[in-house]
Length: 181
Image (tube, rainbow, N blue to C red):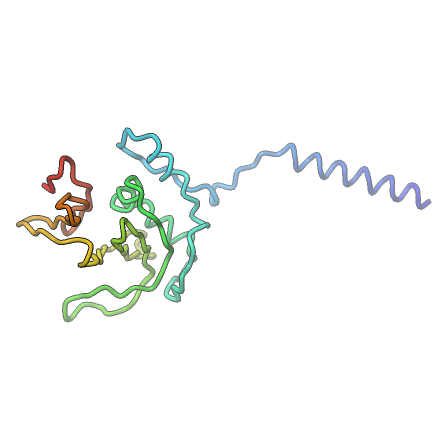
């Protein structure tokens, strides 16, 4: 009797194991959406599409209503975040960050993606409900970079006078041929 029990248990285990190996079901909620890149730099495009949303750390963001992966996914679909990653920026994680705001603005703190590019911290504030990046703030270490402002944008220059990063109210870009326009 015991031999039959173990035999049937073995058969049941074998069938279950084989069934698990044979199925290739993809859970669509776990697969990150693909990011459309206009870049011809295959390495950089690969780097963006391979970011694992669930690997991005929550560094103390108590303001997240959903979860860290969802907030990271929203941020990584933003064109400015994609541009930062294409140029080798590092994601530190999701934090609470209250950027400087004019009087009268809502002073609430929200989840923010923190990215570093050559010791320049860039904070992308995420609106979870609307599923978009509301704004970004760039914090520049004054001892490493200087700012050059024009009518339409701000350019960051390193100690050698080389243009490193440029931005305006809605866009971040990396200067070509040392010109920020």
